[in-house]
Image 1 (tube, rainbow, N blue to C red):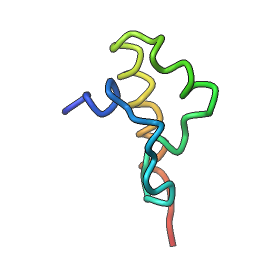
Image 2 (image 1 turned 60 degrees about the horizontal axis):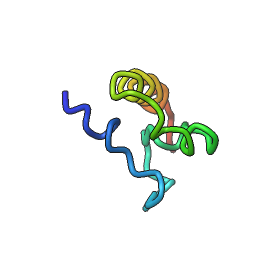
Image 3 (image 1 turned 90 degrees about the horizontal axis):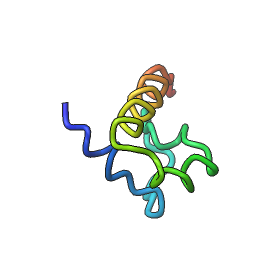
Length: 60
């Protein structure tokens, strides 16, 4: 699995917040502001957690 999407997450240029199963939709504004302060390992763990939540979405 490529974890660079978590490590190099771009929260400034969120193109489409209506994309189904987008893990970034679950990251709070406060956490986005602090993202750069986390280690790569922490970013991966958090990202995987949000990704798991996003995959449980049900879109009509």
